[in-house]
Image (cartoon, rainbow, N blue to C red; front, side, top):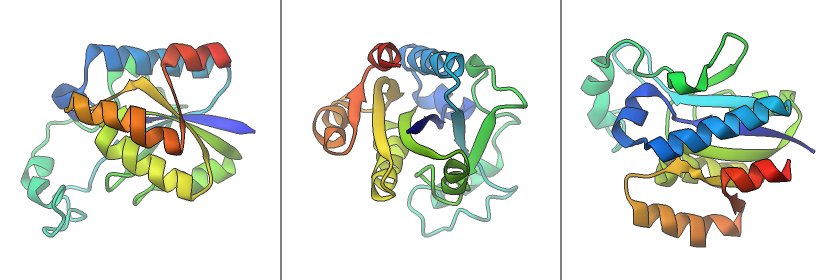
Length: 181
């Protein structure tokens, strides 16, 4: 069964606000391990058209950020430089919290014949949780890299990793996952 590593929302503006050196280090180690073994790496970012017309005013998360989104500096939605993303890498742009929302991710994964997803991302309670739930409903096998996920609330991160995610995914450290390859 083919797998892919999803590296979600590790983009400049989010890493600056919520990222940690430990999370970034674990995520870059996971990317290096996947690349060495020929496992597809899919970088996922959230971005909007100029003026953010996709951010409805009624959307509690994105509606209030319209002006901030519109005034972001150049490169704010680019994948963090620590990953060394090149022209041959796969980058998916989403429009909401889940990596599947408003993106072509599901079609891409079908084209790559992927049935197992390995998740890393910022924030655990945002993109990781939303993507995990949707991927489980789409019948993907799931692994979450606990140390390559970051959340602004350490207690929420802990509860998700220890109590919620294990119901639908294997939760492992990057080192444990790498050793199993």
